[in-house]
Image (cartoon, rainbow, N blue to C red; front, side):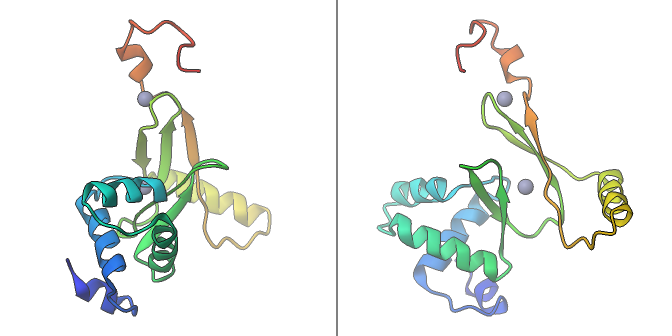
Length: 146
Ligand SMILES: [Zn+2]
Ligand SMILES: [Zn+2]
């Protein structure tokens, strides 16, 4: 576990912070909810509770180490904040999350904001649909997962 990342971010290296940040580094390509983190902690035989998980990921987000994305009203996921801006494509069938960073999209968003006289701080774009997983599993009749 790496103390320096927390120190560099200006927060104290407590055990729950180190442990939870470590999970993000071990799943660096994933977007995880608080519940996902909690499940990882359980399989690591850690006794950090869900309330602590919520508190710590918020602290890590405020320290700039994690990035939050609101996928829908019920789902918030977190990832390491080291990739720069990107948008998310969410498969509503299997839950897979893909990333896209197209400079043309960033330009368009800035143009729309400018035209509206809107001072843009940030934006978040989530595309919903199917990743193709339904096509790959022809055995499942239509509507089974709805
Ligand atoms: Zn899918
Ligand atoms: Zn992402």
